[in-house]
Length: 59
Image (cartoon, rainbow, N blue to C red; front, side):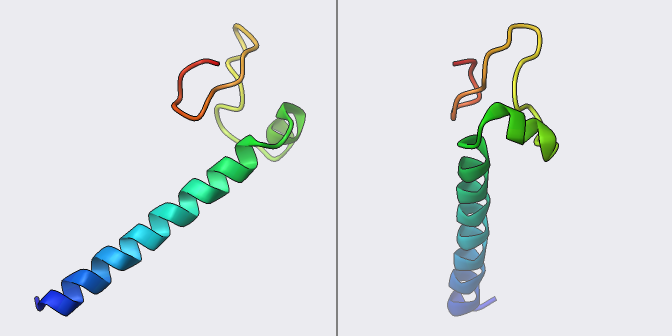
């Protein structure tokens, strides 16, 4: 592998990770009812009714 192909692969992985992060952030900003309607996983901890924060901790 050349240095350029390695840099290209890393850039591609970074862009994909950033796109996933931005998508998740956008979906988590939607109201809880909408998240449930689209089937977003872990929209809430149904035992306590709390929404999950960005770090995955209950907020």
